[in-house]
Image 1 (cartoon, helix red, strand yellow):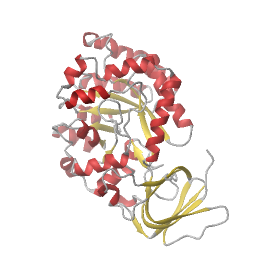
Image 2 (cartoon, helix red, strand yellow):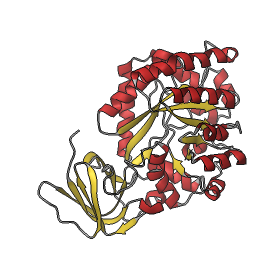
Image 3 (cartoon, helix red, strand yellow):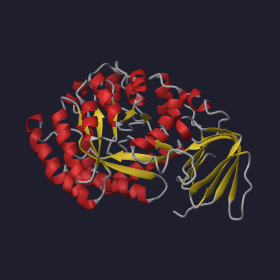
Image 4 (cartoon, one colour):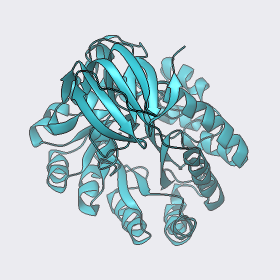
Amino acid sequence: MPEANLVLNNCSQVLTMAGGGLGIVEHGAVRVRDGRIHEVAKGNLEPKPGELDIDCHQRVVLPGFVDPHTHLVFGGWRQNEFEMRLAGKTYKEIAEAGGGILSTVIHTRLATEDELYNRALERLHEMMSWGTTTVEVKSGYGLDTGTELRMLQVARRLGELGFCRVVPTFMGAHSVPGERGQGRKQEYIKLVVDEMLPAVEQQGVARFCDVFCENFVFNAAESTLILEAGKQHGLVPTVHADEIESSGGAEVAASVGAASASHLLQPSDAGLAAMAQAGVVAVLLPGTCFFLREAHKSPVAKMRELGIVMAIATDFNPGSCPLLAQPMAAQFGCIHYGMTIEEALRGITVNAARALKLDSEVGTLEPGKAADIVVTDVPDYRHIIYRLGHNPVFMAIRAGRVIYRQF
């Protein structure tokens, strides 16, 4: 997609996210050249020849939203499980009735690459309409080499469109496939390490390696083994940590040098301290916690006290959080988790970019960074959180090109 030159004028507030806060420039403007931020200024900027002049009509402008944890590619939905959960069924009862991750695995294996691609593309379009310009996409619903690679190939194809930056993550260690059973878990781990990871490296289809670190899925030792093997194949570690119980996931993330750890509903104090020391970003998924009506919540106050960088993600998936809207995830972060508005907005921009090791490229509106920008339809940044359920996105821009506009 060709780069663009433009000027965004007449902004009520430009949130640059620079300098550790919101970096607010009141009544500001932004100039974009060759698809990158050229300058942010107070007052309007004079358009130069070849620059598109966009009047923002006293609206808030901020960086494009970054979603650092999604399961965008899959076959089938699980609306029946949602109804069962509302009727009081437990996770175990739903799984015994044929639900859970393994239900999605069946539908994903049956889908062709083009079928998976077309469904994922529809979801990606909806994400972009909510201002997402960078998204992480995990595999993990294949649990065999061929399907895992097919999912990652779909993620690569989505990224090649150029509309949204797509960051692929290999997550073969999402569960143990039903045909193997828990009694043959070690056999499956060997498949992940000896066959899947080399194939992922050979095809160059992933940036990160994730694992579902829970005592009943892959325990701390098994998770460490898989993540260290991923590092040997050039993949950066990240962890699904301490969601169901305190399983040592935070400690694993710190010990392997993970870029991030997600969920963190029940991390130990020692694990959080280790994460803080190692600089691991906490990716919070408040929409999932809300959707599942979890008793535990991520300990935001403790993370704040330790100085842990907090990002927010949708965790979009068919079972536990069918949410595609990052602004709503930020709202849940404030209302359900007790984050401040500043923490939530940084959580879906610069901190989310840091979770993906992309903070040198996106997440702030600073000269030299990619011109990934959201023009809102609200006059004050607090409205983004305050107006519950409202889509604040008037226009989404990726590398200086408009990828979505409200009509």
